[in-house]
Image (tube, rainbow, N blue to C red):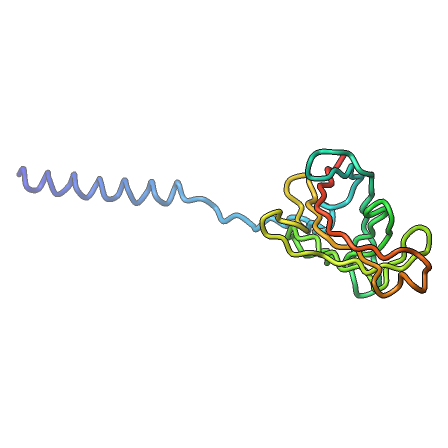
Length: 164
């Protein structure tokens, strides 16, 4: 009799587990339709720019720009001298700020310059880290200084743009 009672208890425990597993089963959740985030939004804003010692240099602004087939950012007053577009697709969620201004770049007074990004892994240039844009670039006028009637100039810059 105890063997039979033991078998009945075992069957009731199994039935209980089956009922609990069916009763506690979670309904399927529909995948959420999260709105897509524009990858350029993180860069948009007003920046106060400092050199590597913390000395204030200038302010600049970055805003979204849409050209047919190309999404980009428009930078106003880069280096306190230039306005130009930076290519950054709206779906690109990276923090890379791909500075590649036109050649030649014209400063606010109409002079021509070669402006280029300088790869700098130690400084982590051309990246937005939290709210700080690290900028590592070079400016020179070797191709234009004689025609523009200005002294030759070349310089590498390391600057921090802090979003306000």
